[in-house]
Length: 478
Ligand code: NAD
Image (cartoon, rainbow, N blue to C red; front, side):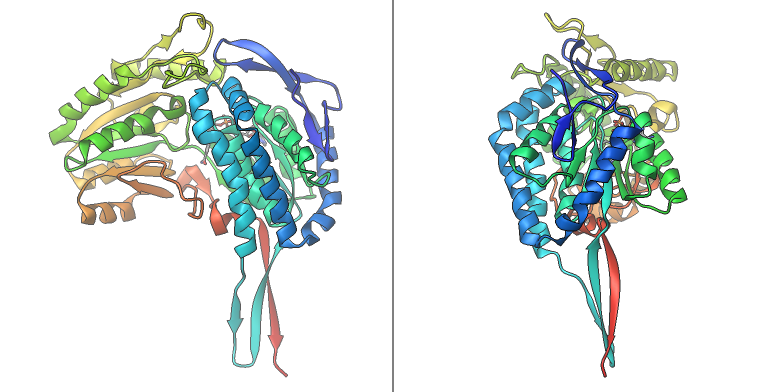
């Protein structure tokens, strides 16, 4: 199988003909190749996007909306095929790709297809004049996305960028490009005009610099690691480009004794280990009020041990494979680090080898206790099925522990005390606070992080505002 670039409406290999290997995480075998693109491929994509911009940006909003709805329909019609591809490429359970990733990708297109038809601008009246704000598309924009939710996050960027009249050069992760390839085919089927959306595959450090520094690229929307986000921020600053950065997290999950224990427990399993812990919003530091610490620990470990880690295609696999060998090794090395730092592994802490899939990359959900909040295990993003538990005594202590990292993406809070919930939500250093829930999403809400987790917000009006430039027009009455 060969993944292709999608440039100027045509699917093609890289100009140099070079490829990169794609691996199936469930068995560690190579199953396909993708273009190992270079600056030349990116240049060609940018030029085709530039050529397409005048016509696309002048289409009536309803027309652009129609294209997006058509793409959403095609994603729905190809739900099974896309889910199989996502699971194959990423290692996530097929049931999860079917239930979450693919429906959310079509929802992203449909949401922004509607949102753009409701997008309005402000007017500011003076006694002798009226100001109104135009919101105009930027031009060619770059959308760079990671491997953990491949089509879900790619479409979350592409849809608002296109809806608001920009043309796009997108760069999916080189680790999981398969559903982006299938999306390209669907865009051709939807008769999206050539050049409106271009998708270039390849290693980030080879194609990234042209994507972010090119003078014809007016904005960069990035989701990925804080390390790469910082590099992109520097490039964007030196070229004075608009930039939105959605980066890493080390999210706290704060549990009070007065919570609904059953509801909290099932959600904590999910928030710790869903998608093998490879969701930027996963709660990896769990703080538990001391009076229920031992009860929580006992039940959390017991329920975690019942979860099946296995081949992504098996319906009873609650958790699948880790996305790549490099990432698998990185997670295992963090488990070793946790032990060196004095952590006790309460469950997991090792790889798993399901029969018939012995060479796949599987790790048992891992719970660690006995670590200081300031150790590396509790400060650095592991991005795997690994969490730590720590007791606390007071609300103030919980806040200090939760806020005690350089990250600030999301936080979960479990309590029946409504005053405490509001009080703490205000004090938590995070872009998103969930009270008595986790990953409960409304696409209209602002999505993003603070501190080293991000700059800017995605979602709803925030995304449409990011992808447009406001221009004030002042008309004086005569
Ligand atoms: P990554 O930063 O390694 O790569 C992300 C993307 O950037 C990939 O497409 C990659 O090819 C590209 N890239 C790499 N170097 C580049 C460069 N110099 N210029 C331009 N592009 C470049 O991240 P990853 O390993 O793919 O994903 C995991 C990370 O993503 C985790 O840190 C996770 O927390 C984060 N993430 C954040 C969110 C969020 O919304 N905040 C969501 C999902 C994942």
